[in-house]
Length: 285
Image (cartoon, rainbow, N blue to C red; front, side, top):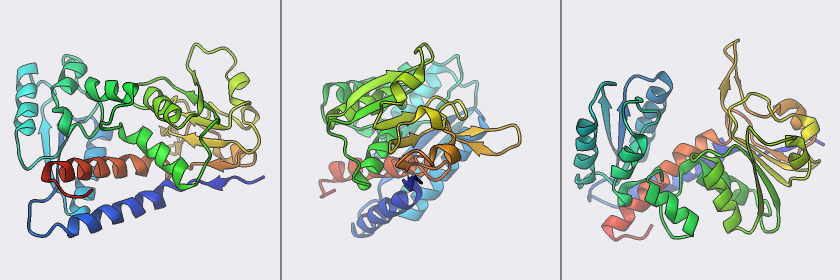
């Protein structure tokens, strides 16, 4: 068996094209606006924010990036967030993680207006997700579900295993899969015998941050494998959390790294921003 590739890169391109077409049709009214707040000089964060800026430009969005020093005070950062909350040109605000340790990330995320929380990390947004109330959904989990639905992967009644319990991926994707009536197991660093669970799973979502933690002998033949991991190895190459080559011989469907979940994260961020814009302007999304 050779697994079919779940191509997030091509799906993200399709979604961006749809958003661009909608944005082009709004005429001479203001453009959708996305603000990114980058605190400090984390290299990976800087690259990610730059990518968001480029995507905004391609889609015809207004981009406002605030690059702030690592020693910024609590009050100064809150003031920046509040300024963006009140900026009529801005529809979405994201606070790039990680932020310096002297700042309380939950306080800062809570300061972002719930109507502009396009990253879905405000605790109120997280609570809405848990309570199954409409709100912004975190971009990576939303992208995972979009991939599964694009490729018509059956979710109702599926046995889904999630490796990783973070607020960024593991917990929200579990909530989303349960919305679609999958049966969920969440595995983590204290789970005994991971393979006992993964071998029975129809869908495995891996967000552990450990290269090749899932090997071919841990996979049920024909299973759907969603690899969220992006790990840089000692030789400079990139690897996911799944042994892609070996797993592809067992799985029925699999996301590559890169080119799988990663491109969908930014696509979902742009879609959330567009939805925020459409709601604020009273136009059809």
